[in-house]
Length: 240
Image (cartoon, rainbow, N blue to C red; front, side, top):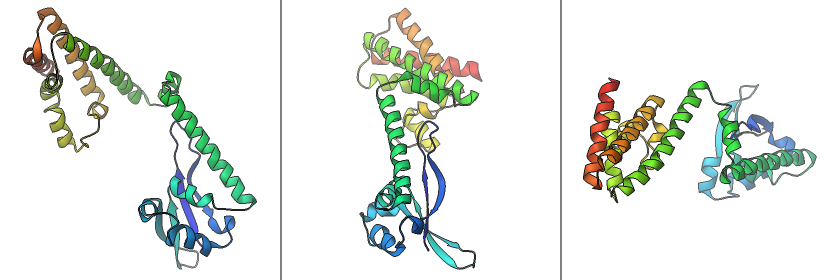
């Protein structure tokens, strides 16, 4: 007898199936047919099978070694949609309901439904909420920064120069260097991986810098980038 384990986690607290154990034989009486067609003989490509059908060995009640398959949600979908019978229909319905829920959440997110963000935030801890506030405040500041720098003649690489001059005193390096030090992938947002204290410091420094640029009417990449460095160094010193 073969069995399978699969996990399906959906965003925003809809955990439809979680570490749910079930007997594949109960859904499809010919288990050899299931394994032969769906997994071992390649119902799908090997590059699909490998990450979605994990072979696991375990000891049964007689201490005999058995195999089971750990299915991702993609693996479960590929196999379960071939099940027949009344019990199979129940599982298909649950899976379809889970998929519909996921699509509803996706559509709300894609349309910019702010109430979804609020619902997610309500599930967060106090620390997570504080981080979220700091991150969103930083995004607003970042948009303002782009507009002000553009008005003051910053262009091309100048935006990165300004950002990196803020990061050097406060984070210990440029965006690229900090990602390397912290083992972050090149394509991820550095600010999404900063602590609340770091986010607050960067946002504060940028806010002061923009005010200084406007007061002094600084122009161009070099002058604006230099002002970012001067202000960031002062903020870093004050935080020590």
